[in-house]
Each structure stands twice: as structure tokens, then as C-alpha cells.
Image (cartoon, rainbow, N blue to C red; front, side, top):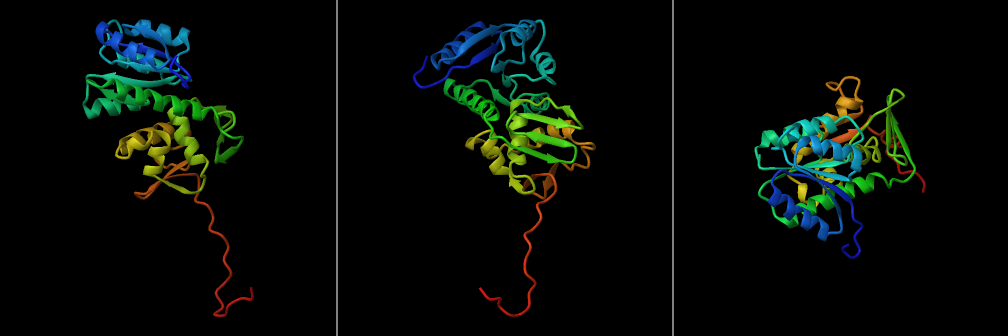
Length: 249
């Protein structure tokens, strides 16, 4: 195991045997435990029984393709999913994010970039489990930062690690506008300053799960072109009325 690094369990889903071996070797050199799958059905079996921390998922798989795997993993408390695909089209990226992926890496990619993406999703997942005790509520939604649970109308809402981290960043600053760059840097990392489509996609996913009417959001509010806010705007501090005279200090 690489010195000073805590390894994770990673499910690598890739039908190209040569590429699968190269990626697995790079991940093992980082100290990670690797589960392997070469088709979609095996991937789902490994995801259910192997309890991976991260799934690296190719889309072009035999038996059941990566879209099917992504759809089956969605809606549960699932590990972080990074799509690794030869499909570099923007529409495929947005579709994968909409379906529950946490990140998207187009082939060909270098080992260093892949490892950096894996470290980033692991940081997000571990940060989501290490919150200070705090409960934040707006309307029917309660975010418990100590237990990493979200409840709406008394029922727990299942979020992906990235969905939760984005919500937690907003909830910790409830009532205040959090700008796009701050959210991207806090949740995805400093290299994602231009990926506002990630924010739009994940905010839409959160609204679909949390809002009574996603078209009229009250939990996650868009603030002009500045960013987003959790709940109503914070009240401005009281100010003494202007009298034209200075008050004694």
C-alpha cells in the first residue's frame, strides 16, 4: 500500500482486458483494492455484494451496457460513480450526470488524471461522512450534517455522495448565497471552475428529490447569475434608524 494513503475498494468495470489491466495496476499502486467486471451484469453483482467505495464505469459494455448499470445503481445509497468512456460528446456527459454519475472522464486519459479523479471522489465521500453535529431545516426538508441524512416530509431521501456534499455546502450557509466557483471548488475541486453544467445538473437532481414543485424551488433557490441558496434569504441585521445625529458610543 502506498505510504500515507488509505486505500479504498474500487470496482473497475471495463470490457477491454488490456485497458482494464493497466488501470487496475495504477490503482493498486495507489494502495486500492480492486474488484473487476467485464460486463454490466457482473458489474451489478459486484456492486451489490462487494460494497465498493467507487465504481469506475465504462459505458460500452457487453451483456448489459453502462447506461443500464448506471440506471440500476441510481436511487439507492450507492458508491460514487465515475464514468470512463470513449463517448466524449457533451450530451453523453450530461446524460450520465443526470442518471447519477458523480464525474465523467473521456477516453483516452492518462493515469495521473484518472487517479486524481478517484482521489477527488473519495475526498468528497469521506468528507460527507465527517460532518460536525448540526441540523439545518427549511420547509419540509431537514439536513442532519452529523449523520449525513436528509429527511423530507418525515421520509429519508437517498442521495449520492456528491449530491449530499453539494446540499451540505449550501445547508451550512443556509440563507446565504453561495457562488458557483465556491461550490465547484468545495464539492468537485479547484480544477472544475468552468464546469457549471455539473452544478446545473446536480441542482436539478436535488430539486427533483427535495422540492414539492421543482419548477418553483424553495429549498435550493437560484440567485440571479451568482449562485444558489439553501432556503429563504437570511434576514438583514437590524439597523438603528437614521436620525441625522451620531449616537453616543
